[in-house]
Length: 126
Image (cartoon, rainbow, N blue to C red; front, side):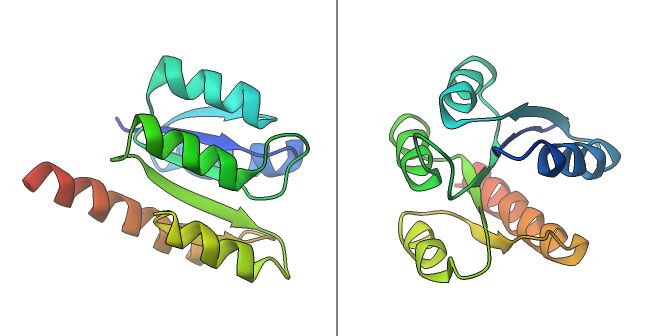
């Protein structure tokens, strides 16, 4: 079972992700801020991380950079609000696998998770 971490400062968003990802068979960890999320990441070493890009304190781009420094193979998906497309493109340039917009649509989540699994599977083959 693949481990997945979701970092978002909105409890409703975390609950929605937990519902979807539990149903998909992932072992799900959630964090309400970047500091908590990075601590969980260090302890649990999930293969996939979804992080909100705009959070109080440490933002999603900093989370992405820190994760890539310690575990470059991790598949990171960035969650953006409307109007954050430039930040999302910056995240992809920093090696995020994909980005999805809030409100989260199942189809967009499915597509991003597929990209993440493909990235992880191709890294194993090398």
